[in-house]
Length: 326
Image (tube, rainbow, N blue to C red; front, top):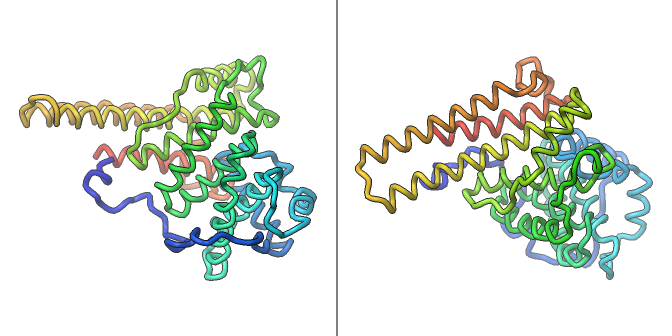
């Protein structure tokens, strides 16, 4: 938040992969996909990176048979049915390409794929389904990776609104709804919740979602169903970190508002900020200390491994939260 107030450089910003006008045109047909070998590599890359952090998509969507059926024709679809599946594949390929070393050719493809998915957005919104919510969520994630953070927020707000109107956010008890791989609704809402809290923190925007029983469901599931399940431990750690970043943002903003609106001396304002910052820093440190050992970032952790990517993800936003208090 301090970076935005002072208009300083954004430490989280990535090198832009697309130009400012990459979504200005409306494609008449779908851009060509890479060769089958490259496509398989990009899908595998997506699965090993973003797919490990936010596993809300069905694994069957990454099979070659699904891709063949989805892209039997390269023309721009005239009907909304099936558009969300087509957009999801393009977005998965884009995310997989972005996780590889950049080249001039790949940047051009990324720009064309994002422009194409942007042209499908109206059709995706019109279908109003779980796949539509997943497509909007993945689109926002891809835009965030391009450093189009404000645009990603605009897209994400549509996805959150649709998920809530469809009831995807209504988390059921662990006994009736397992948190396993077959529960895409749970995984989708969990991914949307964590990503929304992170994006709101980065932008300094008020969060739009509330954790009514998501944390409780996960905590019960971890304790009762799968005490050593690495997926569930990561989901619980991510939820708690997202909630902590939200609390950090809210309490910091309240301290600044009180200074602006209430009669305070300089000494009182400084004392309140130091006290608030100290309390929040202690919360962050306690969260980091209570992380499972497998999710703590170590020099021996392999970045390409599942837990290596997850521990790096948690460490990045833990450090971002800590830096905002300094």
